[in-house]
Amino acid sequence: MEEKRPQAPNRTGEPIAPQRSSAPQGAALYLRWLGILCAIMAAFCLGVFAIGYKDPSIGRVATFVALAVACPVLLWLSKRTAGRP
Image 1 (cartoon, helix red, strand yellow):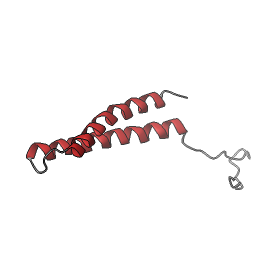
Image 2: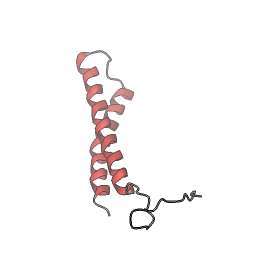
Image 3: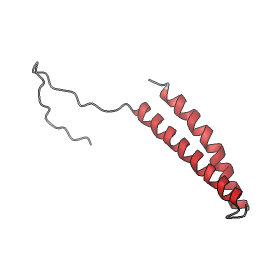
Image 4: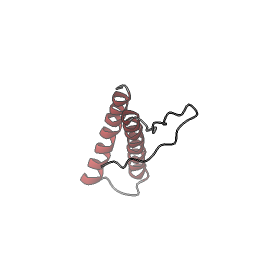
């Protein structure tokens, strides 16, 4: 249950409504940051392969593929979510 707190009246004497960020904007921002993070991790994974620090294995390649697929999907979802009212 949400706790009700008394609200201080504004200059006209009417109570001020609490301001909250809208859920679609917050979700879109979260998805965008997650997509960017996936892109950074995929680039790091490629860098590890390119310099020869670790050899590509099935798990490492699968991780790279998952990150490479998740990045555009998350960015697309963030644009789709931002468009909703």
